[in-house]
Amino acid sequence: MKFAIIGTGGVGGYFGARLHEAGEDVVFLARGQHLRALRENGLQLNSIDGDYHATTVSAHDQFPDMSTVDVVLVATKAWQVPEIAPDLQALLHKDTFVVPLQNGVEAADQLAKALGNECVVGGLCGVMAFIEAPGVIRHAAIEPFISFGERDGQRSERVQALDAVLSKCHAVQSKPTEDIAKAVWEKFLFISAFSGVGSVARMPIGVLRSVPETRKLLDATLREVLALAQARGLGLDEQSIERAWKTFDALPSGGTASMQRDVMEGRPSELETQTGAIVRLAQKAKVSVPVNQFIYQSLRPTELQARGELEV
Image (tube, rainbow, N blue to C red; front, side, top):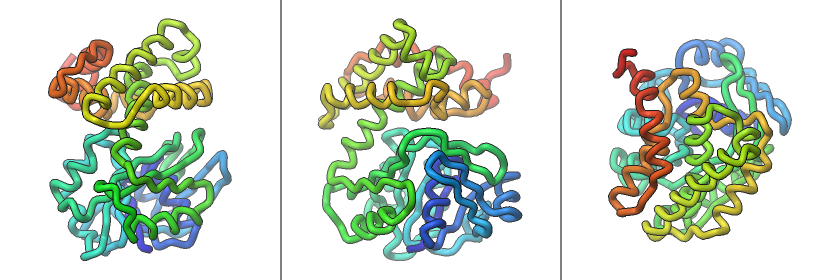
């Protein structure tokens, strides 16, 4: 299969490198110094599960320069999805399908609105990785996985084909599912709490889980998102909370969420698509989310400043 990786950061760089390592045809979308490094030196993956250097890669910064592909993995920040979704048309042939790997819960709908529902397969991923230097990806924690499935719950041939490819990739768990909506929300439950509390406290997970006050704050955010998911008819329950805590407690003590890193470094973040989405969707569902609302309101000025919409 031929893959396009849209966004060659920690997520796209990691999974793109593993697909390349498995012998798949992969083309990358990247920008700036990162793009130049990819073209000059290839893609270097430094991973706790084994390093890999893709010495020669196909990398571009414009969609028209990329050929059509079989699978598009969208690995941009969640807030970038509506911006780039129409441009993905340049990559599609009649059987191409698009899989979002974002942290939020709205990317699949946004892609379907721009491209048509028939070419979107629901998806999410798990990996703690980041750009260590131009052309270099560091995988620091979490056993990497991609979960995906048809949005109507069917077990299609294209889902089986993607499963076959991902299953042969080193250090990638392939997790096809017949309930991708539940899987996306269960991941959202975990990542939104991690991102929100980490961004406000500005401390790594080792501190957040060990200090009683921030541990309670994490649990409160989890339970608000659980209530919202249940109000929307998703199948999350107390076990979802337990799985989130199991993940929190297993992370390296210095671990941080990507949204938190963006907030702390003054970059535009996924605030609107994570905590902001919780607040918006809770209002529609008439669910009370006071902790998440506090987090959102506290971080909103920082976000506006990072986007050049507020002078301080």
